Length: 253
Image (cartoon, rainbow, N blue to C red; front, side, top):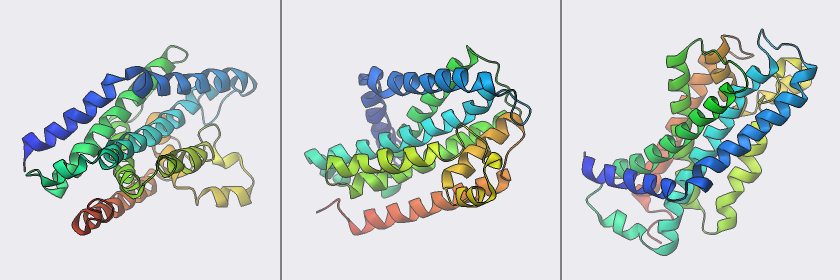
């Protein structure tokens, strides 16, 4: 393992993140905090409790998960897309780095960025309401695993994209809508039976439910099912990326 090369990619991506902190870190934190304030204040005043917690507390894990998904994906996809766009990707491919080291360098940096944003959102939420975490180890593990998996998925999107429109397609038109429909602001148990069944097709439902269970100990879906599905998705992303790097698909073109 070329640890120096892996760390160089990781440090380059982290430097890119902190070079424009208002855009990469503070902007998503402020946006999510506004969701929390608006929905928590407007709807929370009309709802007493959901599964034994206040509405303000209930939406925090969903907002954190939405931030983890969108920011890990966007960080890794843009991180690999721009070297492709300006042609510096060939310097990385010609360096003494294995495919695993390149993948880990980008995904770990994107995961770190997402976890920083998720942590800041949690701290901001604490200013408004106490938020217990019943299973802190599981909460961190699940947050890390989800962010890492979507960072891998973001690499696939960044490699596949050959225009800025394609690069923004998945975060804007797929990930964000799935997050909003995945139980961020409501438990799927309150939906009519038909819509509950349709919600189970949405993979984000399982991720939000898993993180919510680690916070409050209650959930609509068994956390073991949530964990299993995210591991399956992780393995699919890993397999796809190794195939892409082995064949040079849209990298060596």
